[in-house]
Image (cartoon, one colour):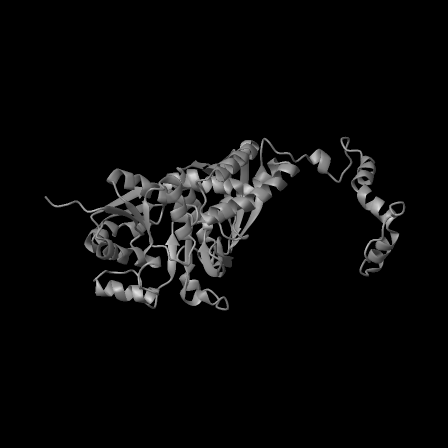
Length: 423
């Protein structure tokens, strides 16, 4: 009777890294490789994977349709939080990783596997995201990260390895951008982008029309939200994944959603990438416009701080934590009145608001008008200002030389002890 080999479940994309990892795992560990491809909206990339994985040496391939779960359980919570990493990155790769890791663990349990493997490099963020999620869900499983173990040092050497093992690849040494695609975004890294002095080539864009080539007439959209969640676009109801795809189509056609940024990776280095996120850019903008109308000042300002922490949390891969669950509870409480309709204009890479309405709007034209009104006594503002500015007034009275220095634009001298407080 043949002894059954231990099993490893590999996060498999069919790209350069994971294509060569299958034979490498078999050669170096002697494991049976169970490949798992998560369908998070990468489209035509999935079609050839089954044949390719088996030919490369996988014992089995799972293709898991996670598109709607991706939107409802990962994209929407992050969008409701308003989380944007370093002002630009809408976290398209980041929040897909805990979802994929969770399914890897589920399949590992089903298959009786002893390990999970991934193709993330030792320089990137994804290794942390995958492994932190696995450790949070199944701390007993071994994790194999070939990029931290093998002798391959570059993507060119990966291509050489693949050619030596007769593994067909979608890239060459000349067209070897590192890309990650799902229904939320497409990222580009490497090659000429590694020099921030280089302008991104418009030919690199695979989703978005370059803004200068977008139509000369604007496109209008209407998005309806209920408690922070988009439920209709242009009067149509979609599944979660279909809604993102519809917005992607509209945004991409108008050149919306291209970001070029140098970001700070969790592992300590800066990296440069170009992101195409047309539908996501539209949703974030629309959601923000609705919150402007529906959230009070204290809540809106506090939530801005939460958004920064939430973005770091997602970027760093610490999704399965009490902190994220607690922040979600706060965010959900703020979204109870974020219901209404936002009309947008898309034009040559830009988005502008074309009208926002909500049954929970806190905006009152009666109070805000510059015309005569019967609800706001402007004389009341004098007393408010006296109280609001009282600390500044007291300081100026106690330290007149400091106030005089500020008046002349000179540097205030160290403050003397106030009268009556001398030893």
